[in-house]
Image (cartoon, rainbow, N blue to C red; front, side, top):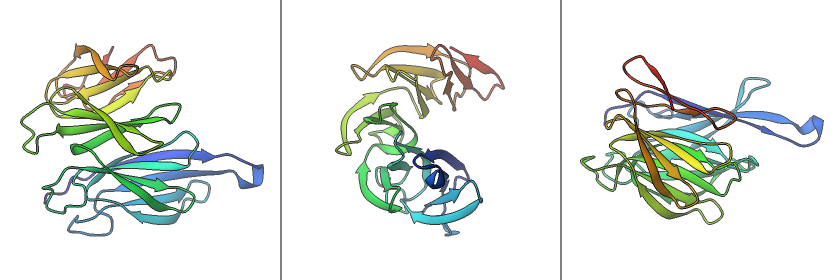
Length: 228
């Protein structure tokens, strides 16, 4: 299996009494400590001391990580699930941050990559690069995960090879970059349906929404930064 070299970091501050406050970074290691890339891991780093507190095994080819707003759980997308040959749908590892252990694993679509968790922590939006098609010949999808039950409640069809997702601060809208369609799917999260599709420059990948929710910024392979 060819290795995709990437690192994703998510930082969360755990609040409480001043003496107990701690800011933690979760770092996705696509190959873990395995040069054959048959398993991945997540490093837990104390950002005050820059010390690795723990390393948590997850699935194969993990790509992205996000924590719930209360910091109780971290969700990690595994592009190949638990299958080192990458012939199985992807999964999401749910890490209980207090014990630094896997609480459960959620099955999603093929080749999950980016992910975002709503501001109220109730739902996670997981981008499946190949949707329900292991050959990646069909449109991709977004799995909506109920974080209370850790089950997929619905799957939303988007463009080809979707890569990343970002939510507005209100949580009412999700924006998904479709790498092979040169578009952004706009999802109405109240109905979990695509309300609009916006054409952008070639090969959109990352995406960020401004704090006031009025603009989304998308870098593309044409070296342009698109604003919608």
